[in-house]
Length: 231
Image 1 (spheres, rainbow, N blue to C red):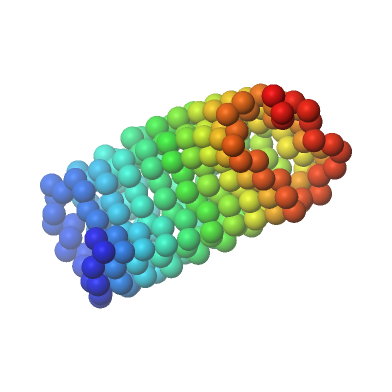
Image 2 (spheres, rainbow, N blue to C red; image 1 turned 180 degrees about the vertical axis):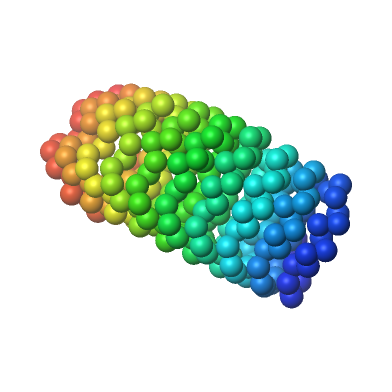
């Protein structure tokens, strides 16, 4: 970590068949991520963040059945988000923010039921937020801000009762805030700013008794602030 390693990541690293942790964080590595990494089936933690990787995230990564942490944020990766990542039964943290991923959030990702942190912010994602993500009941942090997500916030998000931080700011979301957000009683930060949300703030938000940050600026909301927020 934190070196000035340049060049590309050689496919020969797949020969390290017993490695559990592989990290090249914060270097100047270029080129694509080798598909052969998918052969490193003992890998539990993979850190390739803060480099200059391009190309797509290989679907072969879905073969890393023991993977628990995948951090590939702050690169130049693009293409669509691989459906195959749903194979990560034990994945607890997935960080793909600050790249150039396009397309939609795969509905199959709802099968990653052990995940606790999901970062897909600052990409070029579009389409709607799939209701299937509500199956991620252990999720603590969900960052989907600064994309091109459309549609409404699914009411099923209210099932993710372990959420502590949720940000969808700077998207193109429409409709009203679902009253089911009030079920997120562990939430300390909710940021839905800079969208096209309408309607009023649900009184149910007053059930979020540990909420510290609520940002709803730059929308088309109306009405009054519910007195329940002051409880």
